[in-house]
Image (tube, rainbow, N blue to C red; front, side, top):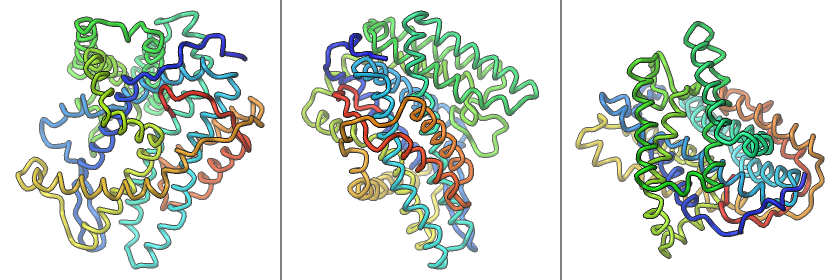
Length: 424
């Protein structure tokens, strides 16, 4: 299937660049600021600062996964239409997504054993392995969106906005079944919810959303947040847009239709600020920062939780530090130092491991299309297994699935001439 005849002009979209950068910064800061940690008697206790009364409102902006999938959808459609073929595009995407994961696996196949040998109790090691692996759900789901993108692009050409509406309706039906006594069906929304948001990115890529006036974009935002408020007020949905410990309902695990309306609200906000964000992105210092973050987007995501594990291990386990009461003066004072220290560790990790993502791929395709699809499905299964069980619970089978998928994706891939969005 050839797509080059559909190619738009090859120019960078700085707005997408900065939305992606803001989103990954939001992910990192939220995950580093949330933990409430203490250690005693060989056991580490964990809590979530966002369980503080009223702080659920923060999650309506800090839960930025909708923006990640929105920007990814726009970038995927742009790059697919610039590719020489669907096969070369899929090969490039799979290899670029999977290669940065392999060094993370290599480290975590060794780390639990090393920590045990150093005398670290089993429970903190299990917690560390779970924390480092649990966020791999995103990569597993994103791989499925990559596999679906050619089909969704064809549906987009034929049906337009009907596609995200249909996916959103399916998400609502799944929620109805989930809350009516079939809880396992809720996991189908890991597909319906995120594909619906991903599909909205297609409409930005083609200009339908990108050309909205600020007033119209704010109206879109108000509608999205308003529907989310109605879901929470009159439905079985939690007020928090992230999962909370001990909460009877989570909007994230599995995802609920709330996240689609939340996405509309957040997308409207960033579109209303598009001109200001685009001007900001043109400043030399910001352009330089975006140029550094773009080729390391997945590496930042993969290694920001191991950075937290390192800092927590030293300060909490070795030095006896305990997180102050969230919202207290001591917590507010300690938070900047905590974020700074964890950021320094992350930068160090990226200097070592970021090169696996930033290295340009080779220049020929060897895998047939069916093999690429199989590789994507195997990798997704392996990543979901790791996200569910953690690195400390016998990860060898799941690691083997992902490593095998990387090999299945071909010995070499096409280097697509796409730099406009630097998406994964």
